[in-house]
Structure formats: structure tokens, C-alpha cells
Image (cartoon, rainbow, N blue to C red; front, side, top):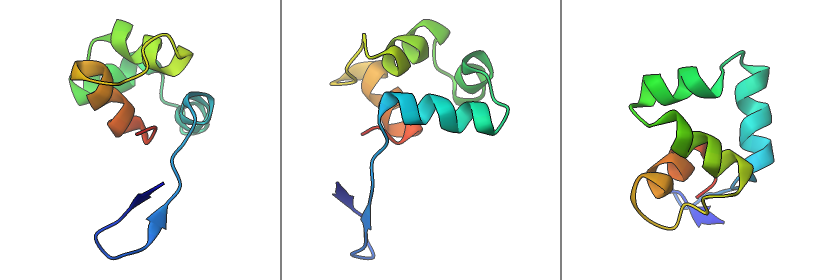
Length: 68
């Protein structure tokens, strides 16, 4: 868990939770990628767990999804 600047802890999501969260909002992975300026392939790989989001665009995607 990472701490917010206010001192409160925020729970991180699993890739599956992030995917379900987008689906519940009616947002496709493609729409999310376009809106945030990411490549669809990278977003898909992060959500599927293929890309662990350790660095680069994968990490930026993971942060945007609340995984990291």
C-alpha cells in the first residue's frame, strides 16, 4: 500500500480489479488507452499481467490504473 500525502493509506488494485473497474464504468481498454495517451497493447498487457509495470510506459499505465 502507498500512503497519500495526507497520511491516509490507499489500497492498490490488482490487474483484474482495474479491468473490472473500467468495465463497470463502461470504459473499454482502447478508450482508456486513447484518453490517457497510452498504446492499447501496453494497457492490455498490464491488465493481463503480461507486463508487470516495473518501468517505462507499463509503469505509467499501472499507476494510472491504480495498480502501482
